[in-house]
Length: 312
Image (tube, rainbow, N blue to C red):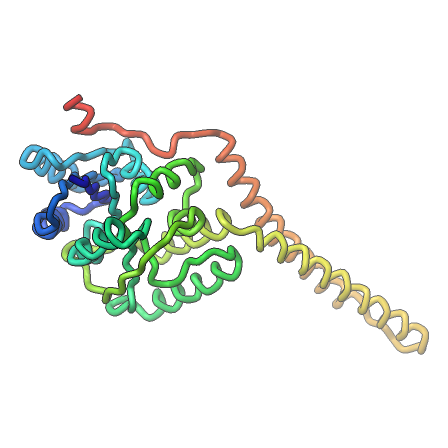
């Protein structure tokens, strides 16, 4: 029998978890010749998520939970879930049921029968989301695809089923600053896409604010692209050429005995160049900071508690 591991990152999902467990269990029971394990990763929740997970683990031995010592982020939670998953195939799903469990049988057929290494859900729309958030999200994916030269289109998320070979390849990438959408694209493998419509959360509220989404986007760009540094070089050359043109213009004016006023233009130019320099020093600083964090070799996550450790 094939074993399927359902990896579920959780952050303040006390309301959604019972609904998620019931719906996914019902779907998985309909997939013949398979067994299921649930890997719930509590990412430092401050509600009653842990109590719900403990209750599920006592009721169903297929349910395993791993609780972080603090909030390490969804990327770390996904990595931890995959690392502790024992299945022949691994699924990553959100606990809010925005990833439809009904797609799981088709995903399993794609990776077990059709020869694909991965089958992923592709969200066709963003119905229910705010216009500003929708616009920013679409713009981000257009920019990052051009900058990183990796396939990361809008709608391609974390919801996917992977075979063991792809999972092991992802686990070999141990960088501290993780961007899973980029990692999925980087490791490659044959992927089948299944479209689905966006749905509202089953319960609770989204944990992604505009601030956290912006920080997530910045992490993605600096983790998989050196384009900002190239941009800094190009802008630097353009500024030198502009300064040369201004110098030539000033010399011509002097040669024609025309009055050349200077202090206002000079002050403006100094402020402009100073601002540009500070901006790109900040960009370079981002890369140095990323390298600094990687060289610290800190753990991606720290587990405080787990029922699987207790069983062993």
